[in-house]
Image (cartoon, rainbow, N blue to C red; front, side, top):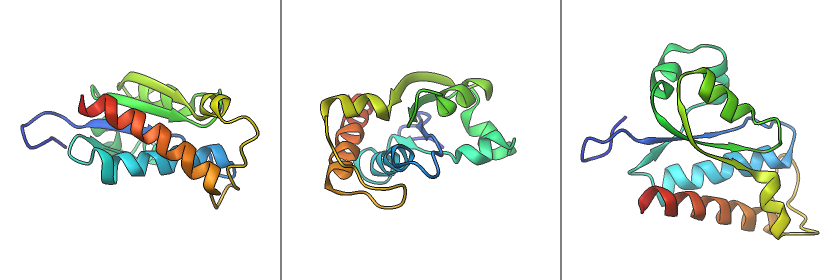
Amino acid sequence: MTTNNGERKIIVMPCSGIGKVHGLIAREATYLVTDELASQRAETVCLALLVSGDEEALAKIHGAECIAIDGCPKLCAAKNVELAGGRVARSIRVVDAFKNHRGAEPGTATTLADDGWTIVREIAADIACGICS
């Protein structure tokens, strides 16, 4: 997709991270960016579709500027964006955000607590600030 002035939207790619609170944080931060904070400049693609070779997902990623948000150090989102021909302009690791929140209790794999939402908002604001500047 493109923006109103014809520029290609930036793809924000979260890890799937199913079963882990870090993955939920990555996904929620992505939705906050793409649905609210920078909806005119950013969109997301389902990582599972990308990995499974979905033609539409691959077409969106190929040659696109992407921001990968990975819950863990395995960097699945970043690696799969690169494998699909996307350009990882920025790679964010949710685990790194926890360095500023020692002792935080973010919630569970299915429900975020207040600490989790605080981290989501920080990651999303940082991404949106970079996209919109």
